[in-house]
Image (cartoon, rainbow, N blue to C red; front, side):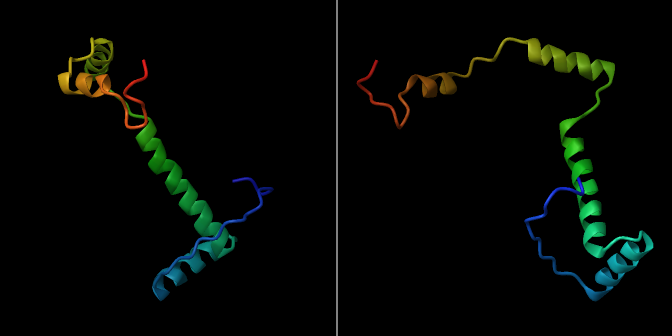
Length: 96
C-alpha cells in the first residue's frame, strides 16, 4: 500500500485483551503502529487468499483434460435452450 494514499475508510474490530496485547507487542517489535501492523498483515493475508483463487496449477494430464473440456462442443441443454427462446421479463412479447 502506498504511503501517499489517503486513508478515508475505517474498520472497527472487537478482540480479546490477550489478542490486543499480542498485536501491540508484534507492532512494537516491528517498530510500527498497531494500525499499520494490522493493516499490512491483513492485506498480505487477503492477497494470499485471493491469489489462491485466481491461480491454480495442474499436472500435464489434468491440463490436457482441462484443455479438452474447453475445446469440446457445448452440451445440448434443452431446458436452457427453451428458457432462452422465451421473451425476457422486460421484453415485449409482440416485438420482433
